[in-house]
Image 1: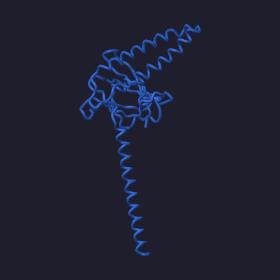
Image 2 (image 1 turned 60 degrees about the vertical axis):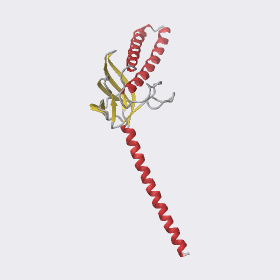
Image 3 (image 1 turned 135 degrees about the vertical axis):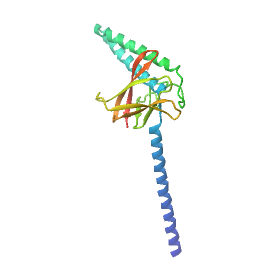
Image 4 (image 1 turned 90 degrees about the vertical axis):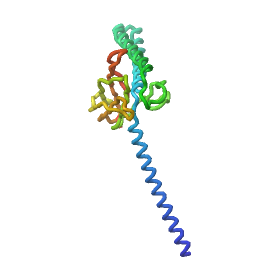
Length: 206
């Protein structure tokens, strides 16, 4: 009995020791995975294309409501309708131009077919996560003039960005923001096709 008891005790200690090691390894892997996800770069040509699509859909919905008001006799909304249509056309021309620019090294896949930044589900909420290490790769043809971030109360939050190079030596931005929770990021770009244009993106500060 003494030998059997001793054997069972040793077996139990070895089992517990292996279990603890497994948990440590798993924690290490999870931490590395979270860091890799946070540091994964955003590719501007896809990012701004999806953002513009979101804004186009928002403006179309707004235009539909105003057209209904106009048809019900509110003639004062006609100017708003015309301005919204002009903005829609500008965003469409911007997106068309993105289809022809040279894609940065490292970017994968086609342009997003649906205006969703988190995943490709048709009913998902289009939001981009912003980590403390957010990097936006611009490549050769995208030029960012300014970035403004507002929280869900429409209040501006501290945001800064600086030009850096990615692992391939391409033009990129390192973005830092104090946003916590949901908000909107307004990126102003200088383009050859439509001049200066500001693209809003629904974002979540991590």
